[in-house]
Image 1 (spheres, rainbow, N blue to C red):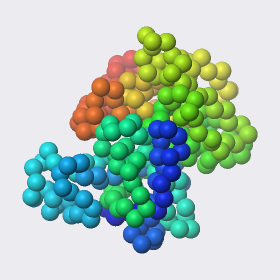
Image 2 (cartoon, rainbow, N blue to C red):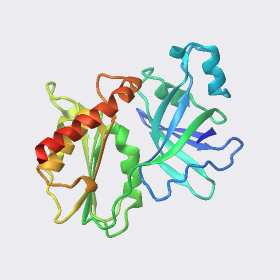
Image 3 (cartoon, one colour):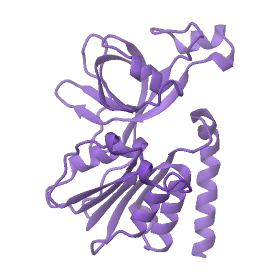
Image 4 (cartoon, rainbow, N blue to C red):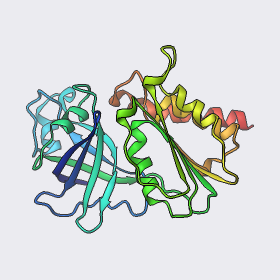
Length: 277
């Protein structure tokens, strides 16, 4: 379902993270209620810079009059927070200067600016029957991890391991008493280390609480693949207790990754089936 959203406020919460709050045009409620899911996401439709397309626009009309390579693009983002009283939704955007389309758009967005949203989709909610919860990922997974930590019941046991660029990218997170948050900084890694390598090592070395784990592992596809293999075949976590997805893949842009992702999932599942046989 498509709906037009309007920026209510903008805040730079870390050097590379911008937080935007959205309403329906004029301040009304959006139809993106997470309905109990902490990884609820929407697709944000954004014009390509330099194409002359700007909001408000009709996507089908735009597709009829300009070449396909200039069509607006969709980018997927997690609902970081939802206000059930106002119907306003908060989305955090990772920004790396002028790189990409969504980041620069979010950095420049001001109250009153409009954008189209599609969704919501709902991907994950922590299982209350689990004995403990593992949340692992990079900046792209941080909004879902933060939302999950906030939704945990008081008695929950949680281990969250989050990789960010450096200490300036850490955020204060609301946690229950049984939650522990470990921040991994890429700036502290050796020159030879690949991004995500320290995150995988931290999960591998984790002193695990006893009992059944429900795991959320999202972020760079290469890292997710390693972590999924670790959890499935070294920790013996069943598929139904594991939410693992590549939000992005190093060396590809978002459009390329969307084209590749289905094959990536199929290859990973085939490898798991082979190892389980």
